[in-house]
Image 1 (tube, rainbow, N blue to C red):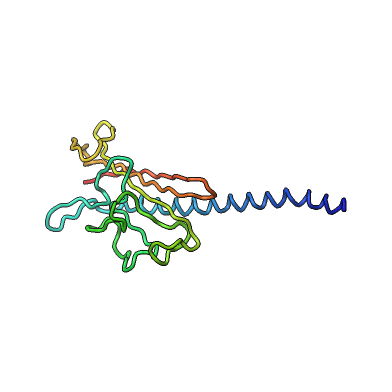
Image 2 (cartoon, one colour; image 1 turned 60 degrees about the horizontal axis):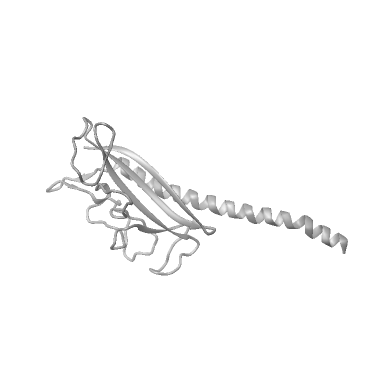
Length: 184
């Protein structure tokens, strides 16, 4: 009986260490997924054209300047939850908006897919992505909203900040990635 109690006392801390390590691995996996989502948007922000010059020049929704707290307008992500959504077009294509009509944020699934609209995600957790695009003036100051300002010699500078928020192990996590580019 004493041996059994000693064995349980020795095994219990090992069990808790395993549980804690599983939680840490889960958190790390979702942080990596979230970072990959943010990196995808940052890469698009750096390499895509800011405007469509077919006919009249128009700034694509992905590059439209907005003030914090951010918006989901111009963002696009495929969770397999939007019927007919085809990602052969990039997220800044003219006319693309978020699946949500409010544009407040773009709902995505980290680490899994969502098979039908409104259902719980399979093998993943829900997350919200927002973007904030601001202008930078010739002195390096952030220019709010659609306020016009004198562009520096490289053209208008845009600061894009992409933020993702999700909950893992009852802990809300927010990650952001900011990139700076010239907008000719």
